[in-house]
Length: 341
Image 1: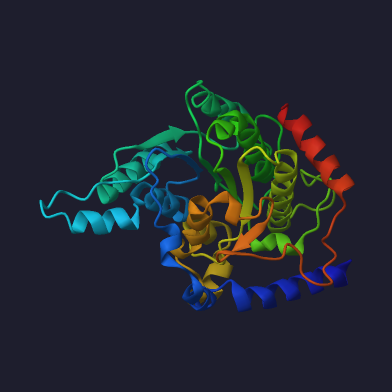
Image 2 (image 1 turned 180 degrees about the vertical axis):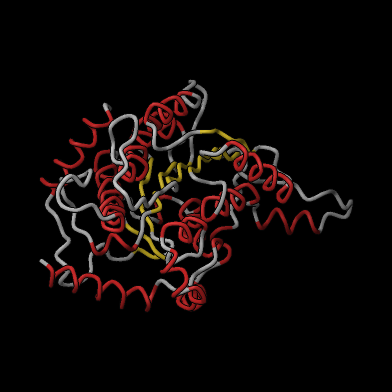
């Protein structure tokens, strides 16, 4: 087992240095089509968790500012010189800290001119707060077009929440599962074309799927638990895609690459220091999230894992991280029971 773990780490590090850095992004972006994300988001409702900074903030800002390229050209040619029409989405930013959330909303409104940006305060470590937050969107006339599960946590000590859940699992898995499941009626009202995008991590490439959801066996390791959680997110995406096939709702997981964010500086300071000049900017990390939000579902593969606007592998060679449908169903059943869905 020790040798396998050492091999997984070496394989991941090598793969990451080749693909996850800023230099790799600059190389990959040469094949990006700029027009892909120039989409009219008028009338689209988007919920983004963990959005007061980093990838979540950049995603919220761009979706709030998104406009149709042809409309821009048409407006610029308008002989009357009318003001450029704002055509961004209606964005709901789910943030834990009220003050930071308010500052982020104010900044996005100022930079985009879009007043349809709203703050919802919710601590994602509390399933009770997640449920109350979802209730605000449960009225009959609300259609949800995109849910971006971005909020994440890497806590290095084994902390138990007031609801009895290991803290990493509570934020990264239980909250994601609960919010997604409870918002499915609103997503189906936004169909066809609605989607759920879960911001996972390449770290899951080192971890198999397992039933020890709350790290109750062995000495607790925050890095390992984070990787396990992210593997579960990718597996949940597969399960949702299978269970809701034909519903008009697409489910996608993605990896943003190695990104320099406040969360990384807090949870992995040595990693940030070592790779500081090679880490991606937050807007580069958000690029694939935005791309997945703006592409027609029929051009994407529900259940797939994306990176730099491409579907990529969920498993590295010889890392023994594949799993059976029986194990996946067992894990999902356990999560469902824990979340009381």
